[in-house]
Structures are given as structure tokens and as C-alpha cells.
Length: 135
Image (cartoon, rainbow, N blue to C red):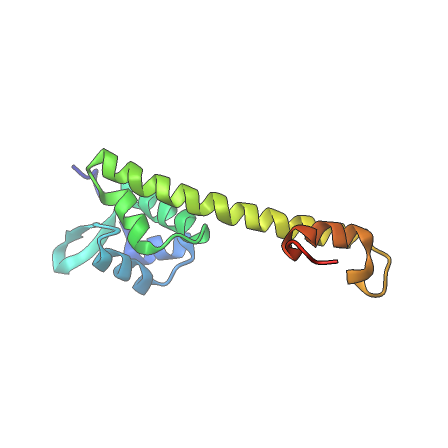
């Protein structure tokens, strides 16, 4: 059961720096379910605010809204964990790629060659992508 709703859609949108239509869209997707009061106006309680924050964290990490919805609304714990494991694996792969790119950039910062591809440090950082049989 929801606690007493205390914030309007405009207040929530302003608090998180969102447009109100974003909150309406999330509501239509089933990501949020604020209490409706007179005239169908949405009122948000603290659990709704936690959901908005979780949605934003998920979106910033690159998760799809459908996956975020599944994690937030699925009552089947094993199904939710399956979704979370799948998303964790995606994020781990993405983080590895991002770390490799950061290493490449940081390594390039140590190179004093006009043509960075001639720098031995840079070459060693990309050698794995060269594949076998490259001189």
C-alpha cells in the first residue's frame, strides 16, 4: 500500500530536472504508478521518488526502459534476478570496453611522436586488435 502522496507531477519533474511528459510516459509504460486524486491528477510519494531515481540511474547506465521496468515491477524474484544478471553482464562488457579505451587514451598521452601510430607505447596498447600474422 502506498504511503500518503505528497508531490505533484510538476514538483517531481522539477526536483529531478525532467519534463512532466517524461513522467507521464514512464507512467504509461508501467514504470511508475502514482496515486490519482481528484481530476485524475498524479500525486507521488517517497516510493515513487525512489523509482524515479532508480529509472534515472538505469538510463544513465544505458539500460532500456523495458528492462528497468522489468526490474522494478516484476514480483517474481527469480525472473527479476534473471533480468538483473543479464543487465549486469551487459554492463560488465561495456565497462571492459570503456576501460580499454581509457587505457589507450592515457597511453597515448605519454607519446611524443607526431604520428601517434608510430609510438611504441601506443602500438603495444593496440597490438591485441591487430590480430595474428601482422608484421
